[in-house]
Length: 306
Length: 165
Image 1 (spheres, rainbow over the protein chains, first blue to last red):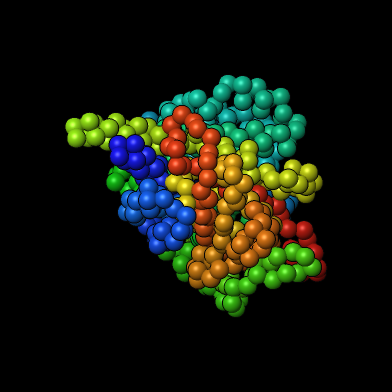
Image 2: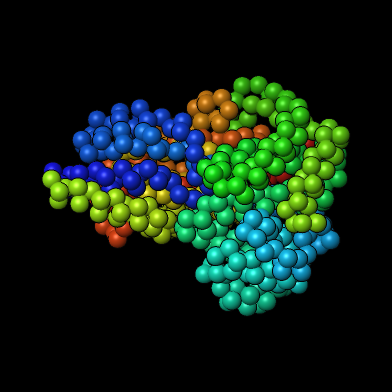
């Protein structure tokens, strides 16, 4: 009896945690009924399914800024090397409170990713140091090994390796925040990284209705929706709540963008390749693009203290 | 009876620790286990996507995750679990807006991998059913829990035709 009880409680608690990654959110829409349909389940597992009913969560995933930068580089060319639009590493010392440290940790991590993808090696070193400085402040020192700096220096002339080093740093530091139960810090860092990525993209991409990069920026609406849902899990934290309000404001700007219906959602086989099509596409006008860029700049400047 | 209550308290304390430690138990599981045969040999430049994840689940449970796929990108989604009985993960993919089912691996020879091209950006819901079976005993892991990994990889779609980019 005792053994069964212990087993049941252990599994219930573990399953309650559900998938743990960059972003586990709080939407309780998981189909709990499905959990109980497997006839092979033991009583213990059935009890677990019931026990998790109130704690099962939908997890929300957020792409890293790297994905967007790689796309923009491919579409707009690799000569978009601008450091004037990044947050100067010299500002790192100005961030002394928990909120600005977490937000700018995300911002500098994104800047480092941009520098590595667009092959601005010397600046990558500077941004690594800023990431390290704020990483120590937010409690991810263990993920930012001094050896990484040596690897960055060693790979200055090797863009692929530079991207890999920066990317690994991004994953390991965000994972450390998650593993150390600093969900509120992680939420702010994700928000900072997202806004910086969008800010860089808006600075790099000139409006042209047919430019796929413009469409890609409009599509960031979906990422924003996931980020907000993820952050809501930590909204009891005043800093997170304040940041959600800013992102909700940005969402309103995104909501002005027209959704053009492309028909029913389909999966078609085209010459051996499965193609997901249909649904809706976002079509942004020049005025909407301008409004979005302005809103992003306002939020970003409030994060960086500009 | 007192002993049972004590056991419950100890168990809850242990489980909380296990929850905290679960990422270190399963943390990189998807990176180690989801590269199924042939994936590593594939010379196409698929890159690791940050939306990949691993987690510790009660066996037999269903979990859902919402992710984003972008227009103009190719994606490869692989699922894996640690059961040593040879059980495979059942997974389905739904459109995040309409909830329409887009893929069900049980209707596709139980394949553990789905590769596709996104011609529009969309939110997807990936639903995985964790199989039951014996698993490796590890510190901080309950007997009936198993690591499940979801590996997402992507690359920019090849430029084809006259109109693309």
